[in-house]
Figure 1 (cartoon, helix red, strand yellow):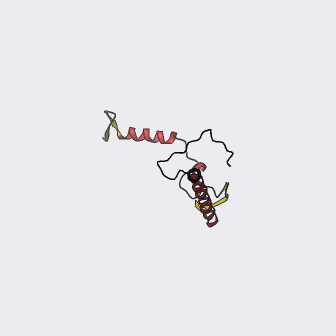
Figure 2: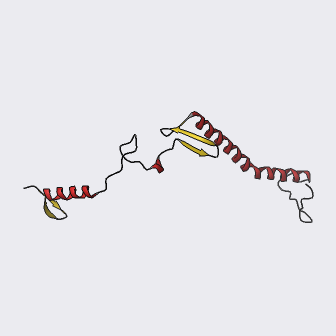
Figure 3: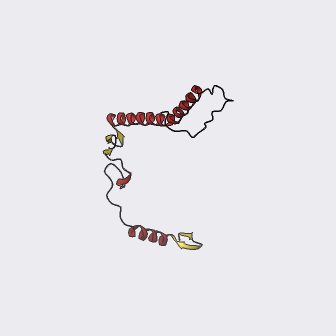
Length: 125
């Protein structure tokens, strides 16, 4: 007599096996596997062969980009980094312009302050 303790009570192994078989038989069968895989892979997580982007069409084979796609992505990264550096230094250029303007008005050291009688305007531009 083969028996196991199942949820605190002794149960015949044949009964447990029959229940497991009934459960497995009641489960829906999986769809046919994705070609090249053992199971059905959701299309949302597979890499498509082509992707349309703002930098052009990127092409892939088995999830790996071709050389033209790699070059396009690296060119885009270089452009993005160049724009980022430009934007990061715009405030510094403004501070440098103010420093040069104060130098031209006689503020040569850190202990001097420039005061205006009236509010500043853009007339000097």
